[in-house]
Image (cartoon, rainbow, N blue to C red; front, side, top):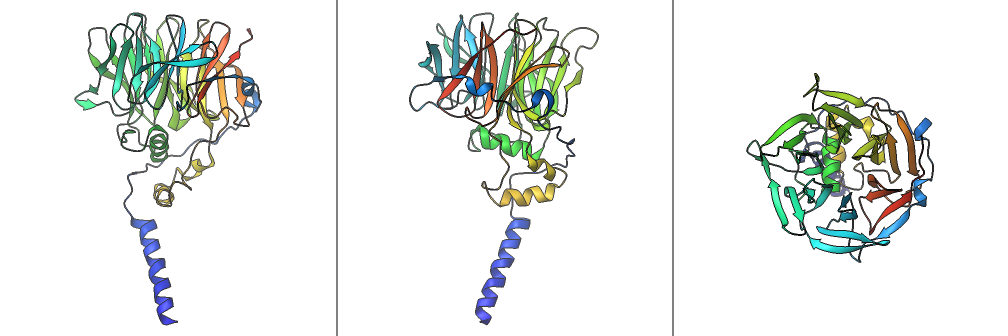
Length: 359
C-alpha cells in the first residue's frame, strides 16, 4: 500500500513539475482583449457562402490559400508548393514552386508575386520561371512571409507574420499561426520592396500580420492584424504619410487576406470567429500550462466561413457566411468579373459564388 502511495505521489509531483516548469517555446505576453461583440447585426450567421461552387484541385493537392488573376486567368497555389490555373470548373497544375506559397498578386509586369512562408517574396512568370526577390530585411531573414500587394508602379508590399516562429520548422503555417497568436508577441511587420530593389520595414509591432490591400488610388494600405482581430490603415501619401492608424477594431472574427475591388471597396476573409480562449490572454502563466497539455487542448480556429465587403470608410456592405463550416476555413475572397472567388486554408478545392451587384 505504501509503495503504491509513493508511486502515486511521485506521479503527481512529476505531473505538476511538467505542467508548471517544463520549457515551452512560448513567451506569452499579457493582453487584455476587448469584449467579443459577437456575430450580430451585419455579422449575424447565415448560409449564403455555403452555396458556393467547389472548384476542385488535382488529387493530393491541398490548401488553396489565396486567389490571384494573371493575364485574365485564375490562379491558386497549395500546401505542397504547386501552382494551379483554373480551367472551367477545375484547377490544373502549371508549375512547381516548392516552399509554401500563401499570398499571390499580379504585378504590372505580368508576373505573379508570391509570399512564400518558407522563403520570403518570390516572382514567377511563364517566361522567367521562379526567382527570389526578398529573402531578408535589415540583415535578418524574412521568417514568415504571408501576403503581398503589388502597386501599379511595381512596388511590392508584403507582410511578415512573425519574427519568432518559422513555419518551415514548426510544423506548417496553421500550428505556427496558433502559436504566434497564443503568445501575443508583437513581432509582425510590413515590408516594402521599392522599384530600385531597396527593401525596408514600413510598419511593425503587430500580432500576426496577415492580409494587405492597396486602396484604389494607392494612397493607403490596409493591414490585417489577425492576432488582435483588427485592420489598420497605413498612409502612403498625403499629410499623413507614414502614419498607421486604427481602421477596424474589435472585429467579431479574425481577419485573414484582404483584397481590393475595382469599385473601390474591399473584401476580407475571416479565418475564424473569436474564440473563447481569449479569456486566457491576461494570464501568461496559464497559457504556458495550456500549451504543455498538448495539441488537443490548445486553442484553434472555429470552422465557420466568413467573407465580408466593406468600403473605404470602414462600413460593412455585406457579410457572407458558411456558419455550418461546409467549405472549411476561409482565407481569401477576390472579385473577378461577376464572381467572388474564395480561398481556403485546407481541403482539395477553392470556391466561387455568383455575385449580385449591390448599391
